[in-house]
Amino acid sequence: MKGLILKDLLILKNLMRNILFAMLAFVLLSVMMKNYYYAGFIIPFYIVMLIISVFSYDELNNSNGYIITLPFSRKTIVKARYILSLINIGIALLIGLLLSLIIPLLNSDITFMSIFLSMCATVGGVIIVISLLIPFFYKFGVQKGRMMLFIVIIGLSLVIGTVFALFENAKLPIANFINNIASLHYLIIIVGIILLILFVLYISYRISCKVYQKKEF
Image 1: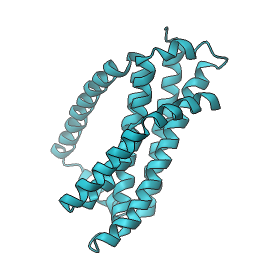
Image 2: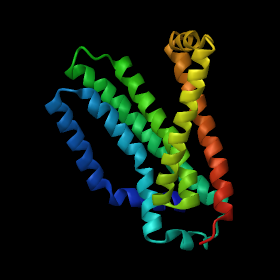
Image 3: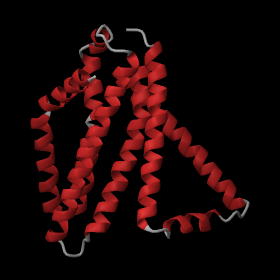
């Protein structure tokens, strides 16, 4: 499995020049706009989303047909891709932590905790999107997978909007429930978000394993 992870890391290494250029562009744009939150949000977001580049590279080069001939189970192949995702997430959080320490030095109106929590929320949101994307990528490929995910997100948005509207019409205390969650200690919120993310990743992994087991190349 180490070989599979190394393969993906080497793909990202080949993209390193573009990655560094993009990061520099985001930093310069933030300085010009005097909006340091921009770099704080976009850079961790960009790092996590790099996992899509690995899928695109494999699809472009038809790598999966070769990979499945290696002495690895399909479950191991999927697991390696999720471990790579966790590595990217860890790097994104480290960069977010570093930026959270630097940005308050440039702008005294911004506190470490406010920007770090915002970055964690951004990374968490991206992780959930990635968790949804990966099973679609395994099932439909990168291009069709993105389209199918877009359809699913639109559908979920309509369902959630309808549910909230029904709650409001029924005069259920959903607003109080949301306010109670927001008033919790930030550590409780962070732990809750982490548990939710791990749960979503686990479900995504299980679905991806089932899809990839049946995939023909």
